[in-house]
Amino acid sequence: MDIKELRENIDDIDKKLTELFARRMDVASKIAEYKKNKGLPVLDPVREREKLSEISKMTPDELKDYSELLYSLIFELSRDYQTRILGNGSELTEKIEKAVAGTPSLFPEQAFVACQGVAGSNSQFACDRLFRRASIMYFSSFEAVFKAIEKGLCRYGVIPVENSTAGSVNSVYDLMMTHKFSIVRSVRVKIEHCLLANEGTKLEDIKEIYSHEQAISQCSSFLGELKNVKIIPCENTAVAAKMVAESGRKDIAALASRQCMSFYGLKSLKDSVQNTENNYTRFICISKELEIYPGADRTSVMLTLPHVPGSLYKLLARFYAVDVNINKLESRPLPGREFEFMFYFDFDTPVYSPRLLRLLGELPGLCEQFSYLGSYSEVI
Image (cartoon, rainbow, N blue to C red):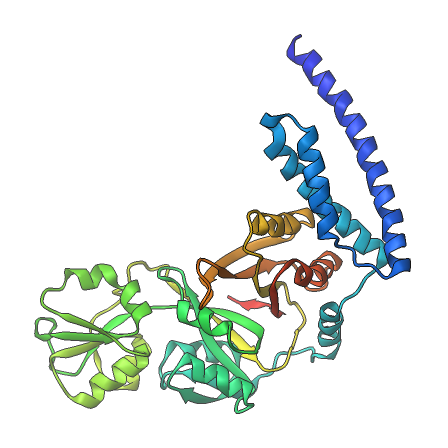
């Protein structure tokens, strides 16, 4: 047979498959009505496992893996179709819809905001990008910022989550697992690191350099060229600049922003020492209450999955089936559980999309633990 004949065979098979798929989905709709009348959930994991086992037995050995992938996706599509027919809401989707309706149309221009570090920190600059007039309370750690939100000391908090050069701020993702909060907005801030020192200091005089571990990572190439200089991490770049200024010493320096130079009366021994000019840090703005402002087109969730083969694939297939684009997937080890992880997802779909609400309504049933962190827009 030539290629034309083979393709005609494929076309004929596809026609039959399409007709059978439509028949299958029609039966699925009748099953949905039955489940509705009996008060049964859409998801029946026992039935799905049994079906996959039966299909595997009917499939040639060389095609077993492919058939499992195919039918796992068909099951996802069937569940989505049943949920759409039933119009099933969930406690989470109702909560989201209530937040959308109850949140003011404009993001506030002024508020009490918690930031980690001291004046001149990058968190402050991120805060300034988000609010026209913010009353900032500074805290010594990221955990203290989360606690300030939980206790109601501040309405909002601004926290860094990832850098384009150094990657994710792992300590923040770990804290996300233990604190209650909602993300209401995010912002990207371009980061420039300068080597700052007291007046009269020369580059060759420097014996110690202080900065946050992320800034140190972002400036690794420059630091690697220095000889006999001790690199010392501290809690914040602005804290490092303040410490250098207050010490009066001429043998230490800080990696910090140009704004810190004027703020603390320092001078720059070398500008823009980060590894790349395209150096951005993404900050999230968090609150105690769920607030969803107009234009929210990014959603964040955290979840843990059953520790069994294929659990992550099945979840990802669910996103694919409803055409929701994942733009970030981060994993962090779960304390006290060997080789088990918490997964953090960002996905780009407007919160007003029915398919996203359906997905969010079903995800808790697929996970051991599930946390909806919020839907929001990002300031660039």
